[in-house]
Structure formats: C-alpha cells, structure tokens
Amino acid sequence: MTALYLLILAGTIACMALLDRRFGLFFWRDARRASLVLGLGVAFFVLWDIAGIALGIFLRGQNEISTGIMLGPEFPLEELLFLVFLCYLTMVVFNGARLLLDRRVRVDDTARVGKGAR
Image (cartoon, rainbow, N blue to C red; front, side):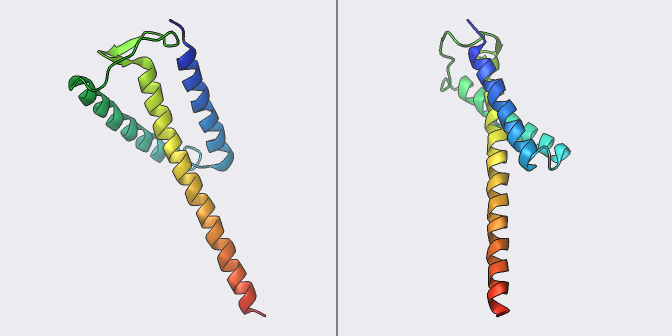
C-alpha cells in the first residue's frame, strides 16, 4: 500500500485552491460561507456513501495506490478527500462559469450602449 492516490487528491485540491485564489471564486470570495457550503456538501456525500455501503452498493476495491486506512467499513480515507475535491471543484466551476457569464453580459450591454450613442 502506498499513499499515491492520497497525494494525487491532495495535489488536485491544492490546484483548485490556486485557481480559487487567482480568480476569487470560492474561499477567496467569502471564506466563512465557502466553509459552510463545502462542509454541507461533503457531509451530504458522506451520508450518501454510508447509505450505499449499508445497502451493499458501494464496496472498497483493493489496489496498490491507496493507503489502506479505513474511516469505517468500506470507507477509505481517500474517499473523504475525493468528496472534498468533488465539492470544491463543483463550486469553483460553478462560480467560474457565473463570473464568465456576468462578464459576457456586461460586454454585450456595453456594446449595445456604444451602438445606441452613434
């Protein structure tokens, strides 16, 4: 067992944080609100996983790149980090798309105002 998958997940979360910081998309916009949203999202998916495990839907596969550290039956440490990454990625993409669309609308509005002034 290695920590390769854990390190990859930590690296991708760090990359999300860099994008977030650069463009002020989530934590750098409002850290308190972002913490609450991320915590609720991760909690929802942890409960979802627990339900799936209880129903026999989710099973942990054996592999060579995971640590083998289990937080519960069929619930590896890497799953928790993956859920953090999934929720963080979703919010960065959502807020990034919203930022791009807002900019596009402002550019379109500016172009319309400029044409009307002629």
